[in-house]
Image 1 (tube, rainbow, N blue to C red):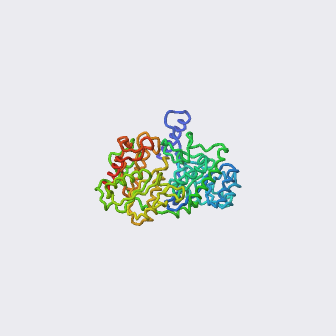
Image 2 (cartoon, rainbow, N blue to C red; image 1 turned 60 degrees about the horizontal axis):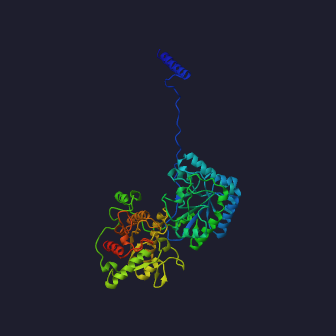
Image 3 (cartoon, helix red, strand yellow; image 1 turned 90 degrees about the vertical axis):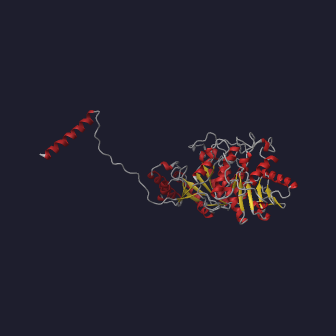
Length: 527
């Protein structure tokens, strides 16, 4: 009886289900259960991500991404080959399939070939694991079939290097992924002088990418979106979009010139081009491991926090005591013409006060920037003179017997992205000073603002934000930072007219009152 009831119940339920499906009833339709296949996972370790390194050596890596046209590609390959440069060309699976002779030419020229996925797809972090594996694996197969070379490096175009993405790189048979720090394309230089200026501001140990047949993304320009006055070597188009890859081939005819100008400038700057793998061997811990800062400190140093270039209180080293003669034995102040005017004022004070600031010396040069200080000494280079001889800062300090150095290094490149490069170059300069002068104490001074409305660059907001970044670097590495700019700006963050020597010209140099205010701060904040 029980079995019969169960059979009847089953038939009844089945009939109801069929009736509902056939009549379109408003009641819920009984549907068969669906098994959801979980997203596949990768259990292997992620690939190493090769990036630029901190180093005192003049080395860079040069990589090329993509394809333009046969004539341009052959010109680029031959230019690089003739220079004996070991560059890395990242090629897509499509390029290996449709232009195999070009890929073989790259291999025959002794260049390293890398995997640029099937089609240089962007934002691969949004893909499934299967899609990314297919992109990398199939490109790997096509490159091997084309030229017999098995790439070791992957370049993921416009992609965030998440753990899953890097795991897919290894699963596809590659060793590492490459993330350049600088990007160039056919629009980057219009003359040799552009490339020269670019290399003069270059951070050693960078990976430079030249994108072939592509416009740069906004992020690849490195521009923070701030309106800036000085035209840089890389001048972004106002209409650039993240997906602007399709441009007529004729626009890429400047690429061979860009490559030639860059290689010339690198050679003149004493740079050696190495592969991304070799570059990692040059890594040096310039200032030691950075110490962790409190959240309260990080909030104060957050550049996005301020609408005006002012702080409620000085940052960095707090007031300690007034300086004595002993504090200025072996002290050298280093900077550009702003520091030079302060040095002139100190010399003036010493006419009536011979012991003013003890034996403090000044080492200055007009237009001396942190970038120019790192260039080789030459007839045209910007370096300070000591005993009638042009010298690097580190060697001049050694000749002067310096025991403590105060650095106020001018910011020479006003592009927003250059602020990070400034910090890296300042770290390198401090490292070189310490290497040449064991035991020397380094103190970093804030950069000073200019008067309101001056025509020059950088702006006071740019200087202010850079000072916050400098202070953070100093605090992370236990380097004294003196915020003298706090004592030389008004409520709007500008240099008061009463402190300025040349308000109608440059608007940045200090008069006697300005020098007094600056010295009062420095002399009362002895680290």
